Amino acid sequence: MRYLKAFIAIGVAVAVAVIIIIGRDARREAVFYPFGGIPLKVVAYDRSQAEFDEDMKAVSSRVAKLSSELDRHDSGSEIARINRDASVAPVVLGDDMERILARCYRWYPQSRGAFDPTVVPLIELWEGAGESGELPPDAEVDVARQRVGLGYVAITHDGRIMFAREGMGLDFGAIAKGFIADEVARLLVERGVARGIVDVGGNALAFGEGTFTFGVADPSSTRESQNLMGTVEVERGAVITSGNYERYVTIDGRRFSHIIDPRTGRPVANGLVAATVIGGEGVDADAMATACMVLGKEEAMGLLSSVPEVSAILVEHEGEDWRVWASKALQPRLNLSDNWADKVEWF
Ligand code: AMP
Ligand code: MG
Image (cartoon, rainbow, N blue to C red; front, top):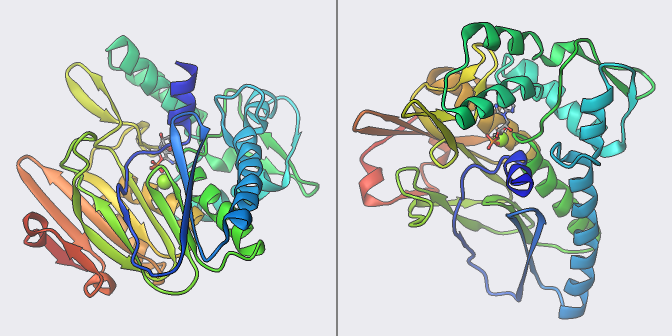
């Protein structure tokens, strides 16, 4: 169970299932499982076997360190220590923690609070509701909401963190996949890898020259069948999906998303079932994809227009209707399968 929670903690929602790589050069691949069940896949081009083996040793120790910092379900992790102590006294931040928090401080205001890494009390409330099968009373939602808000987190000039309220906590489930992908890619580039892909549970980051083709998971298919809704061509950058069709809790026969709208204190239910953000750094794409899911189609488009270098695919499901909105910039690069192609509108 612990393992399962750790798995969930990293927040992998959707598989961008298949990576199809078009290229002639030597391709090497390795898979790690540093976060319970989530595979971390590394692809590198033009490396000798000996070079690649050394690369993977370095990757392995880097991701072990990241996991020991960012997994809040590991009681010995840095984030767990912060969650335990920062309401009582300031806690010193490590370098990685400082950097991931810096991105949180960017996306929290830019998403108008839709992305909020302090949603822990609400996550726990709704997970508990999923286990008991009963909806939480409004009063409990309100109590949990009082404990949520990045605005109640203070970072001191000397790099320490303090929570302004009792019962607060950090969770990087919405951003860690992208952050880890960026870190691993940076490490590989520093080691001399010119071209490659880092894939954390189906969320990918491509670096180097040339074009990469990624499959985009079909949100109407089951985990087992793992169909694709299409493929997208990318020239470096992230392809990260947030979705609520694979991970949810069932309460009273109704499905509830694992993504919480911090503004209401409730699981999101706005018709969006998947948001894929394409381009830029993994950490930003990951935060943005989750924020889009919270904001819903209209507001998501507003957020996306404030970041012109990224594109996105938004999928909405209402009743029997499926609709897709995709950035105009993707028009020449997105190949949707027949049953999706007639559902797309470009924005
Ligand atoms: P993702 O799959 O990247 O959308 O991340 C989903 C995970 O992020 C959830 O499983 C929670 O751990 C966490 N989370 C849920 N709601 C939010 C939110 N509004 N802002 C930030 N993190 C969230
Ligand atoms: Mg995310």
